Image 1 (cartoon, rainbow, N blue to C red):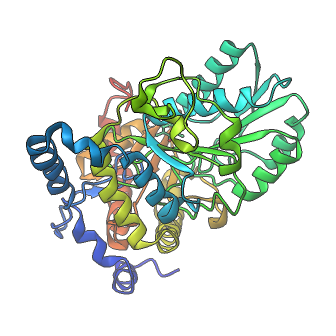
Image 2 (cartoon, rainbow, N blue to C red; image 1 turned 180 degrees about the horizontal axis):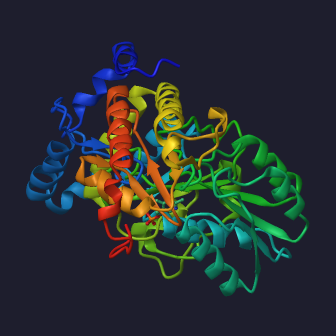
Length: 421
Ligand SMILES: *Cc1c(COP(=O)(O)O)cnc(C)c1O
């Protein structure tokens, strides 16, 4: 691979997604001192259209339309769910709902899934999954008197399918797994793992938070059972944006939400005496949806669908390859090692490095205008979101990373973390 800056510029010149960059705020500065944002997988950038979209909902729909605007808002959670299903999730109409947070959706679908497998008393997850996922699994197990099988997963390589296969038996009700591991970016095989879990008679609940908008996701083709995910990462829905949930069509009638809210009720405005779940995906709704948050999600989801997940994944993978190659050439001599799968086919769109002073390095990088993410125990995570990050941004960010290491700039930063982000 040609590791010159000119080669990175050539990749940008040939990038079919190049024009999307200017549709995000904060991308106008091309100077050498500009901010290089490599944390789009934690909080995506603000699309330029979003403030106006929010202002329309606030000033016209809320300000002028008042309560009458509910006529339009009421169907938004399923309309936006269908858009996500079609544009980024490879799911069918009526299989996706936008609601609540990822954590809450995980709880709802895990409780529902466990209840749909009576006689089975084990939940499976990995010891290295995102904290909220493990906490929710533990809480559901406790509430239902179940046991958790927490499988060892390599911090860098992710879960070995053989480890999962060995843990599956007739006691397992639901397996919870991230498609892309939040720390290393390790990518699981959606279809193969789903098959493996189905062969054991269990359900699989996928967390797509670090996958959606970054790697191709074909839920219907994989026959996936259940899924949840964030919209504020690669989908650029903004801080606290509502999450999505997916339930395969033929499973919906068997599954009941553990939270019997009126937004999951059949014939909601009949205000009937007892809860009776709605027919389709609406049964997984709970309460009044966050209308403003959904307006922002809609813009982000539309941009992602317009760019096309396949093209985003191709560019994301190429940027990750550049990071890996520059890491080998520039960072490895300073004692940094790759903490993500080396095989691009086994990786999402982010790349992680390990170094004993990862926290100090993260601080030094931020002070030099490069925004990565620190991850425990000793990792620096780089997430160049393909919608608005250029190859030269990756190149310049890595070159600033090399300078920090060459100068030992991290030495002057505190090793103690005052605040974990
Ligand atoms: C980001 C992320 C979450 C966040 O959940 P919230 O309920 O939105 O706070 C959950 N799971 C995974 C795997 C994530 O990456």
